[in-house]
Length: 278
Picture 1 (cartoon, rainbow, N blue to C red):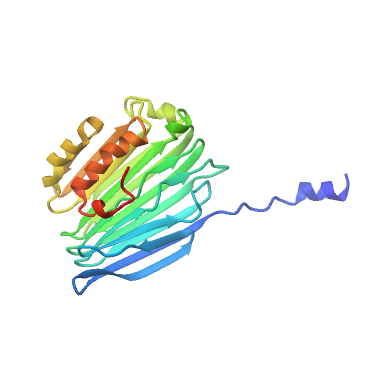
Picture 2 (cartoon, helix red, strand yellow; picture 1 turned 30 degrees about the vertical axis):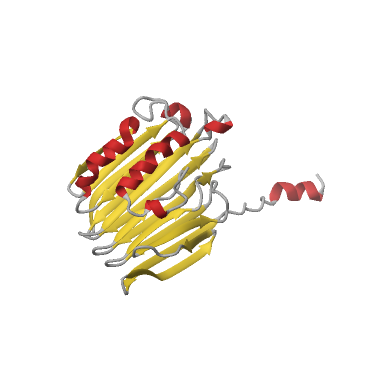
């Protein structure tokens, strides 16, 4: 064995480059308008502020890595102080690409102060074949605060012929009101994603799904109009200042056709978010 062969056997390959990102936005009320207090951006996580409207602060989150794969980690933090109102979305769908090992991680932390309102409405997350995603969302809402969360997932791209994909997704939501747990939700779909989704107890053959949660003192008032908006795409229930909806559709286009009217019912700010359109 020559020296080159010996080195090839003993020297480990260099670690692969991974995307890291941290985006932090906090805002407060000043002279009747919601204004940014803290804006922090690290790595691939960027936040762009849009022109203020009707007291709302609109912001768009950007992942400059262009997508995520195994080993990548992005964290988002948003705080809305007393009386302020903000809406956060994304410039495009988040793409989770094939993993060579491990899961892509997205961690979200939200805080809504007294009398404040926050809409967390990113565009859809697309899982490519053999993608792996672990996503967590932790939120704390004041007693009279208002928080809307909407997350949606597409299992492959039907228009590109991706009708059967493998991979895994694990999502965990924990929402607290004044520090006390009021909502918890966990989703885990693994191995053959499309096969698992085809089961009646899962997506019943659907390839796209969404979850919406509204925490607000008047959340129950939106139940009837929300059910009318989603039709037979999903179901919704409300109790004690919480409204939860889960939706399933055959593809991303059908999901958005039902999701956009649902968001318009629940969010006073989605109309101005140009990203939420067809």
